[in-house]
Figure: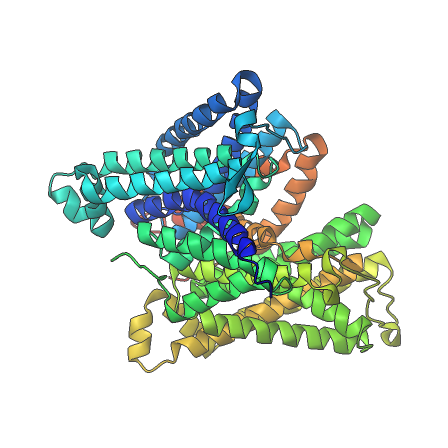
Amino acid sequence: MPIDPGFWVLQTLNALQLSMLLFLLSVGLTVIFGLMHFVNLAHGSLYALGAYVAATVAGLAGFGAGVVVAPLAVATLGAALYFLLIRRMRRAGPMAQVLVTFGLIFVAMDVTRMFWGDLPMGISVPAWLNGQLDFLGIEYPAYRILIIVLGLITLAALTLVLTRTQVGAMIRAGVDNDQMAACLGINVERMFFIVFVVGCALAGLAGAIAAPVLAISPDMGLQILIPTLIVIVIGGLGSLKGAIAGSLIFGFVQTFGAVLAPSLASILIYALLAAVLVLRPAGLFPTKG
Amino acid sequence: MFRHTRLRLITLALLAIGAVLYGAFTGYFGLEVLTEIAILAILVLSLDLVAGFGGMVSLCHGALMGTGAYAFAMLASDLGLSPAAAMAGAIGLTGAVAALIGAICARSHGIYFIMATLAFSQMGYSLVFESPWFGGDDGLSDVPRPDLSAIGLDLNDPRTFTFWCLAALALAYLVAAQVLRSGMGRSMVGLMHNEKRLRALGLTAWRVKAVAFGISGAIAGLAGVLAAQQTQYISPGLMAWTVSGEALVVVILGGLGTLVGPLVGALLFVMLRHEVSAFTPYWHAVVGMILVAVVMSRANGVYGWIEHRLSVRGAHGKPIEPEVENA
């Protein structure tokens, strides 16, 4: 067992970076589920799309433009999806929703293949993000620090909005009891729409900032989907606290598992998930249903 | 409740006659396709048994099929059991694994059940993918086929092997139908509709679910054994969660909770794949759009839709109230 403190700092940063990426994805998915009881398996595809749009725009107008355009483009697509499919599927059971969004995954994967081809794409970051930063005595890539910071900012912003503003109070009321909230004069339908689009934008943002560290390929949405689902199931579907806890648990178990017990690492997280489901079937921080 | 309506019996007879005639006269490629349909049909049959009649929508049936395939390959190659014994062992083992998963997941419902089974599916996939013991991402090759020369059959002959798979499908169907008619099957349907009431009647819910999931898993294991024998090579790709997702798609396209519908679904799905991939590499997009359209139409798949139309037409004069099967 290494006792070098630098090792622990490095792995903690790695774990945090993975956690923040997953947080950006899972928070949208979990709030959409909590508010709308809608299971969107295509969330990962939106993330992949964000990565592709970011890479394309970054190639034309620089990295910064890519990171700004990707969430907007994905949010627009999300709005279109909402009006075409999601709104009609709201009253259908979870099974129908899982299937429709599973179909969307197929379509999205082939559409990205049509436009961008099968080969993985790369994306380059600006020079000022390319270097290494001195952090608590170790060298760490500046870009990965940026991911952590961006994740923390999003987390803080969402926490503030959800706990301190009127819109946040309305959303929480909708998650607790949407019919009651509607009776109190809250336009639940419009709130659903806003939350869905913001969730899509966050998925697009996650895709854009993940693009430089991971390879952009048509199946990247499929690959990230399972970790995202694990995060929200461990945390409890529908709760912000759960998304935070779930992302951190997943990030740390995965990262430290891979260095400390490589042979067990891949099974560890699934075993943990199974244990959570057996002991707390509704996750660690269940929302009142 | 599951019943063999006249329509279902006619459909079954047509499917059986069609399969036998096609199998008897088609060439090598046709036999491969027919075998593929038969194996997929066994898998979706097992999934419909628990998803359509028990409300247990599982995303681990692909992994259960993979378990059957790997168990068969390892029992036959590494432990040197005869293929027949290895088949029995693999099916039994898969059934036991499935029963365990069913028991653990029995408390979860709806989306949580789907996620829990997905977790087990991924656990199995990682285990097989990472472990050199299972051949890792190289998979296992040289999987044997059973030796039936004692009764004058040679399974290395493509046509004989296709009929071997069709016979297995017929057996799997009979087992599934028999299970649904048994008291256990009826309890399972009851649990899907009103778990609280059946508990109040003194039923041990988790045990029924575990047994049902176990039987379903054993059938999925049979599909896996046949898949391993067909290609004589297996890879972890067999256990990926998308295989389970596709199986669910086939069940939905065919008609959930009709037992006959998924057979039709398997036939359509494999044919569609071969037809569509002949003129576009993007056949997944086509299947995805069909899936979205079928689910959005609120029909219970192709076969469920036909049943519904016929029962509406059959009731002329009377108020139009479709006979709700399995309700």
